[in-house]
Image 1 (cartoon, rainbow over the protein chains, first blue to last red):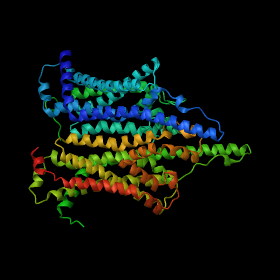
Image 2 (image 1 turned 90 degrees about the vertical axis):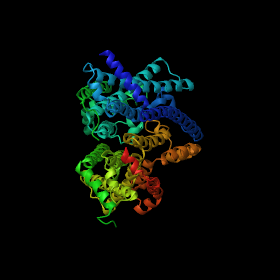
Image 3 (image 1 turned 180 degrees about the horizontal axis):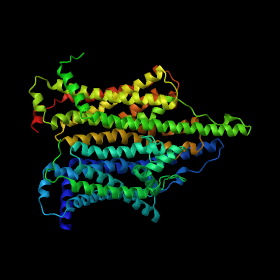
Image 4 (image 1 turned 120 degrees about the horizontal axis):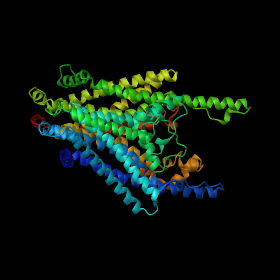
Length: 311
Length: 327
């Protein structure tokens, strides 16, 4: 079984690398990783420069000078925009990778051929899941390399041991978040009869958790949800939002990822309260376990005699 | 005026009938309605919380024999509650338009009905105009349902009757959202007829959507120094608005780049127009509609211009229906 699983995983990865859409989204994701590092650096230096101008102005008007807000921020917060890009382009790229891993076989007409081979029941499903995990880890690993290089290039942003540990955990969390959307793409690619529908199901779920749930749990408008700082504003003190977070917290994946990233990249505002019945980390782990199960069940139930989509 | 027997009208109405029959447009419109109403209701709950907090603070101050003037009463403008609904339309409305455009092309390519259509006495251009008209009708109808239901809910949750001017403002936003969504329809429709592989067209459309709708506004928003510090950098430094403007004069080129990135996004243009017309942005509260429209005509023109360019592109490159029927 292990041999078949490995073979399917390796072959699937080789095929995905040939897909232009996957390459395009990967390049886009990497470009945005670079943009996020630039934005963090640019915004931080601009705020610092504004502080210097404001301090000069306050001195000239004999007013007290408050502390520089930049000094209160961790060097890790330089990468705060990365969490937004992971939840936008990273998730979408993972959905496409997950979908393509199955769609290529279905459209290529190889599913019936695989179906007649002597293979253990779970080998195909596990091979696809392993391929997805390897591809997502590769994508996140490349993003991590860019971030590490950013910290090497900018000497004013030095990380200590805790900083490096937090950065590693942040990329681990990002891999988990992207992976679970990839698994949804994998499950949907295997389950749906239509190719378009198989892409739409995970995209709709992604839209719901990214833009609708944060509105219900924290009154975060869709555009504010894109700003890593604004997205962490406390919800109004109303029982509606308290109960909404309590109930939706365990499935509000974007909220969970947003809080975890902010905590790991050290820009979570002090006193930020989480009302969900389960912790953000548990939410992501539970969702990943569920998505793995869903992907394996969908792949195992896929009609191996037909394969191709209806339209 | 199109005749009922005109090929353009027949193709347009057939696409509308198809979308209604397989309930596609009903499902996606229901999703946008749910998103818009969620935004409206949560906005109303947040406002009600602000009012309650103000009333409690006012009662406490009066009980202590102090003046209630020290605290500012929350301002209530019903149309402001539409902010979330407008933002959901920006994002989900554009996705729906991409799907409608993709389906308009994919339905013919996937079902191999292009060959059949080619046997009929119909010009290439008539076919394309019919498809585009069908998409426009679907988007206009779907968004009309969204805005009508949102206006009714707004009336119910706010408890304030909407005036004719308010309804006129909502109608303007509906018209702008139709133009905005139609540009995404044209984009995916065009790509789905140009590119060899249909899913590639859909993914490319989504990637452009991601850049135009989410990434460009996000970069502009993030580069705003006031968004980099929780609560705002100037608020933390206790600097008044007039002094902020004076300090920011020293960062004119930075602001020009930031503004340029934001203004390049069609979504931001639609948002600026909508927020001004609905009075969501403070500076436009209480301003007569005519003066708001005059000030925001640049954003409105930008929306129309994008549609014009995309339509010109669509018709400038004749679609090789023969090639597509062979695939």
